[in-house]
Image 1 (cartoon, rainbow, N blue to C red):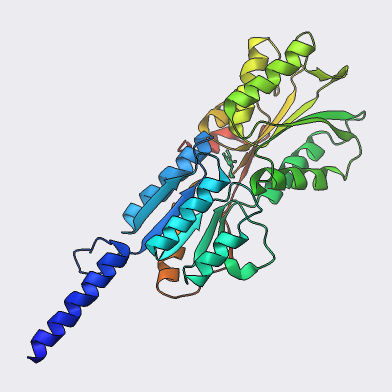
Image 2 (tube, rainbow, N blue to C red):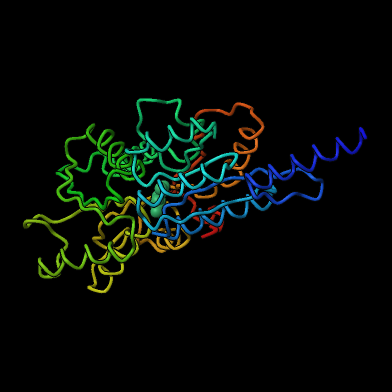
Length: 333
Ligand code: GYE
């Protein structure tokens, strides 16, 4: 009688947990951690590799992943997070496409006692209790690194240096942070002036389009209002590569080629490193897309009710024309 009662309770518990979460039960009979992940989309090679990293790490860590692609729309991300809450996942992780506008949905997650990991891009909120941890890059520092490279390169050069900036998605911490850090550090030398800035949304074809429009309007010269551009600072490699394609098609030199325009770019995908090696790009600021393992570590701890560090900035390098470029390990994307 006693054992029958226990059996009923056990099977009831199994039904409830299966009904609530539809979880696969592992061979050991333990429920795997169920992680809802809302990705922005696939705007760049960086992003595609970032998604790969998340999927791979989930698999390697035995984490059941609900992966949702928002196709560049915040409203889709909010919907995805709501469905994760309804599904009663153990942990929610998401890459916020922009910094603002998350409070309501994150409060819903908090009320449902589901911990949230903010990945890759940061959010802006007055209520820090709405998420457990941030894991990813330090975009402001990336912008500072780009500026520091220029301050050094042009030290004692005399004259003024005009800059064209390609921004990523406006309102995102990745783009706004880089722009902020860049200006902050660059303001130390008044010889630098940003004379043109446009958003290409982190998309390669948009980078090319921006170059095409400027060159078409200026008789194939990279100039704005009659003023020649000396430096290009681009918030990601995708836009840089698109922009450089257009310049090359019109015979305009960049990098350390004869009278080349200086190019500084962020991400460090293989194609950008190749262009650094061939001398078409002067400086590449690394941004690490491979954060899957860190996210899974945090998800497992949070699901177990443990605490995790609030802020994890991944380590990132800077590669310049002055380095021994052979030492750069092959990139994964
Ligand atoms: O630099 C860019 C991507 O959020 C840091 O987004 C990320 C940026 C990355 O699409 O290529």
